[in-house]
Image (cartoon, rainbow, N blue to C red; front, side, top):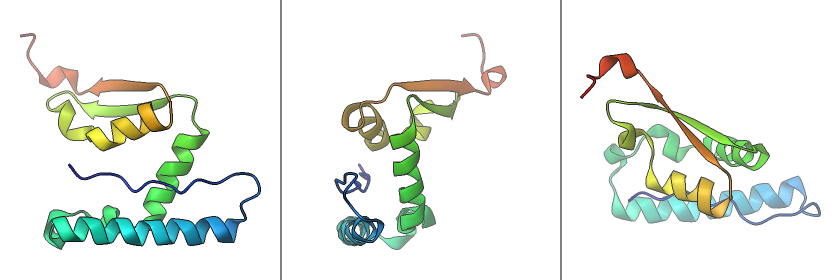
Length: 108
């Protein structure tokens, strides 16, 4: 299971520069770890982009509830377990799954 990079702990006294430095250090460590387990071809470009992860961290931190829209034909493909655990367990946010494309599956 490919985990998520974790945002370093911070508080109101942490400067932007300090936080960005810690995020970069943590992210490089996370990348080294996944590169020791997977080839570049097995990873998406987004997994290599710290800004994508920063946006995700901030969006979840600011959210009261997180909504993920998933394709009903294979919802587990669209919900990485590490993301679920991060949202629900680590960030303690309620998670709502919206099943999309319900017209493409049979009633059975």
